[in-house]
Length: 482
Ligand SMILES: Nc1ncnc2c1ncn2[C@@H]1O[C@H](COP(=O)(O)OP(=O)(O)OP(=O)(O)O)[C@@H](O)[C@H]1O
Ligand SMILES: O=P(O)(O)OC[C@H]1O[C@H](OP(=O)(O)OP(=O)(O)O)[C@H](O)[C@@H]1O
Ligand SMILES: O=C(O)c1cccnc1
Image (cartoon, rainbow, N blue to C red; front, side):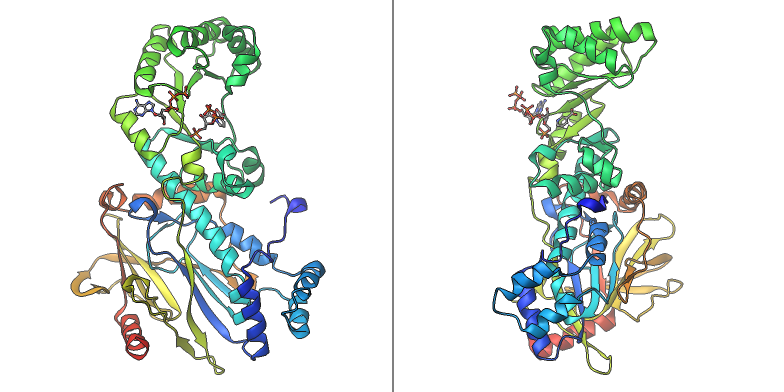
């Protein structure tokens, strides 16, 4: 991160976190240990899974948590907070534990993505930014992963900065899109900050700036002979765009022995035009010339173009990816799951709702992902109480927590804990992986899901089950509070 320009985000909280914090402080609850879970309830676009992202930005925020004198002055001006509380905020920093699912991991509804164990005021205050960081990047990584899978091995470049919702939407959005599988971005600062490879083609303005299209193409080839993608649709793609591009390639690249080049199409019928373009380029001997297309693309249009046998090597995708336009909300929530009494005993807490899907899973929990040892495929996720250990040398009985008669015994499986510890007593204890490694890990983990879970329409529901002990605790709390 460019530290000289970093804006402190401690005050990016919802005001009620401060009023509750002041209230906990005045009621002697400030040091009461709490457990909060981040989880989500629905996969956007009706998909079978989402991709976790945003942890690195959450870590940076936690490390930098502090109130400045200006912040405290501002809060004093509200005439709501006690002087003792404001004095406490002056020395405020994070002292708790955080567990999280690593970035790039496929995640499913109801399971804890991030778990915070911290004194009440600290845990409460970080709610908003924690959700913001995880919700935004998980949304974009999930959408990008759908688009990348639709492209079936062809490169997808992220082109959306100009239509993103604000600067952070563009910059961290490009990071999330890369985690989801994009090959690079047009967003230069995202490369500078995070190492998302930046690149691109040219705009119509370049072509319009010259007296002729041919001159525009020739000049570009002369300046960047090893990195040429000519935009061929400014005037007429088939009549002049592609012929002028071929002429420029012949006049500039051919004498240099360069065979690699590209064209981009940004309008018109892309199935028809790319088939024609391929034919014209091949006939002219430019068989290695790649064809990039862009223009309000998404996973469904890409799928459709490939079904129409469009001849496309690369997709540029902007607005529909960077805004996750089809369903632009990742509904991660932050819910209290337990508190500790003065002796340090964990007391599970539940949030009851008329809507069964909104009832929370209580307690400090641990989640295992079970993998079939023969196929390597993920079978189910298994949420248990934090001190339960799954012995994967023994068969494990799974049951559907919403339909307990549905049972299945799994054998020959490997149980891997889903979360890692990120902070211990306020100290970072997790080596943040390199972005490149997160992207690779994401692709590998998506591959562990069955095709039926990955498909876009009506995917199978991946099982997220509770251990019998956790299920019993939940039922007891429901009997007491329901
Ligand atoms: N063969 C095709 N099948 C399905 N959709 C296509 C096909 N070719 C293009 N599209 C999509 O159709 C939409 C057409 O966009 P639009 O109405 O802007 O037309 P256009 O040809 O791009 O015109 P303009 O010159 O104004 O950019 C885009 O989202 C594009 O990706
Ligand atoms: O369509 P997107 O998926 O967002 O991809 C990025 C778009 O941004 C650029 O054009 P711009 O939007 O500036 O102008 P245009 O729509 O007139 O081409 C580019 O030519 C793409 O069309
Ligand atoms: O490099 C490109 O072609 C590009 C970049 C941003 C938006 N549209 C296209």
